[in-house]
Length: 63
Image 1: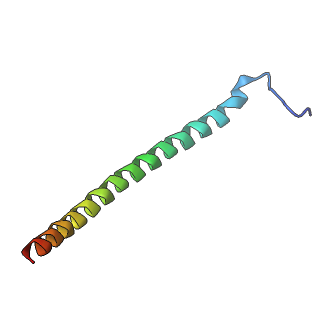
Image 2: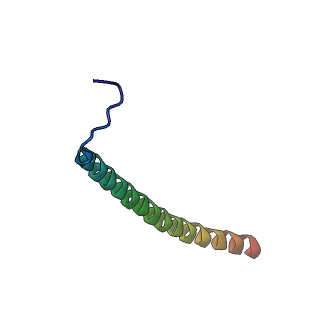
Image 3: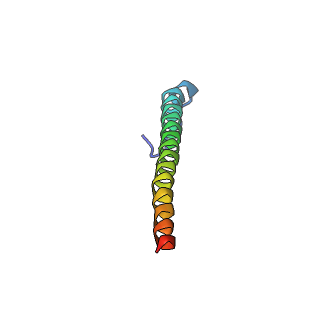
């Protein structure tokens, strides 16, 4: 069998193509979930530290 083998019957490519499509879809869903989680964490971080920033400014201004 030679190093590169291209079958004459093109249906042999179907399992590889289906597997590729499945893994690409899973990768896209994973990236979407990471993006959503990142946005949620960013909003929580901004809400937490924006509150602390306002409290720090008020304490400095009151002194």
